[in-house]
Length: 626
Image (spheres, rainbow, N blue to C red):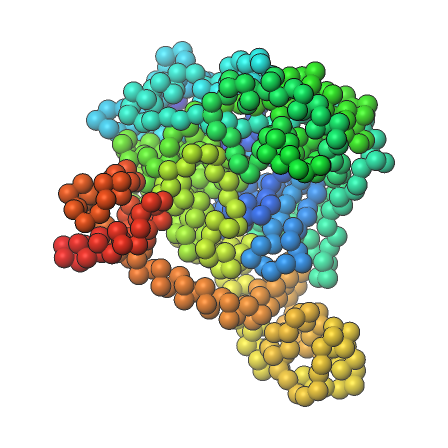
């Protein structure tokens, strides 16, 4: 029990994906956790998905990961965001039952015969000759493995702040990982402090929901289907519940402003930098002082609990101030608080210390994933965990690492941003972070990545055959649309008139579906017969994909040309032994940046903040000259 192929420390979303992927690839995995009851815990918002994050979950599923499937099995509400906008920005969000989610994830972990669960506190890594050899726990027990993945979340040197009070903890009710930070420093890895926070949890029985706006779940679409994260065949139809919306008031803002001196954010107690895109409520009130009110969402945490999440109301103000703030919200005048809000400060390793494989540059066999790399969010963590797990196994067998590219995935974009840009704040995945977002849509993650997942060995044969069938049927449906002609009969003219579309001459179904407001259901009204597909969810995916490829053909081709143009730089490899400090034609500042990041290609070098196109031209000439 002291020797493994791969050791994973931490059992959050990154740790789970890392352990499962490594296990399914045949490695003997030791999964170490501070608390076995908190596997895949959602310590903040009990929700999965949202803009760009949903793309990550879909990509995890397409590669053979588990987050999408478990989310589909445990949702309380499904909602497609931006549904009226183009496919590049549509995003599924699931309000999750956090209790069922962690139980389901633990079930997944315990069903893996290659995973050994160990509840202990890892305090040290064992490194010899710049290679990882294992870890040591607080009792001095040594565990050995040639691959180690650290997924420590906010536990690494974690410290919780509530008002002017603070104490050591990774999350409320769970101790911090103490000692490991010092071990990483001794091994030559630098650290930086980051900060995040979470709002209070309140008793739903003490909320007056009549004063709140209802945020209902999605109904089935025209095909009779809901939207799900996983591409796998089984779909679980669960009863759904609403979320609710309230707003801050003038009194809320007054209470916050009068108590800013008690906030550790403004008193200087917290030195870590927080996530820009998820600020605390006091930060919102200060930064957006002209905004008279802010949205606050009231969201259930589980089917069988009255514990409720107050989204958008993260704070580190004292408990008595928090109570006053909460009671100033419409509908929460008599609310009872179950858990107070708090801020947590923790250690992370600058991700520029990693390669695209997520292995550290200084210590072979040591991989990092999740918040230790400076990210925020369950989805970002899970994506990194999956890639770290795959590459930890590839390291064992000396195989080429799997490094997703920017052009093929949001996961590739996420990792490239982390290892290329010297980030100073927690990184959150956004649609705008990808220059190829029209190609990297929520709807086509399987078409982009399932072949890779199958080659790696994580996508099962049944799922892969289903994927191949779908891929072929999309092509067949597009060709069928081109062949079928539809006549402008009086009935068809009337149907098209309902959609404000003129129809005065014989046209192919392909030409008609290019029009706005015309979809396959319109074509069926016009007499077009969709090929019989028994599985309604597979049919929905095939028709949706065919329609998008036709409607957005010009835009897609334009972006593909952009990818091909950028690919020229991605294919120019920078030699590992290049000495940037000897290059006279570029500035000292640029030399230092290039030397710190050590980019693999000219394309990656160009994405480093501060590196100019002229510098890339110099590098290109020098590389061509050898």
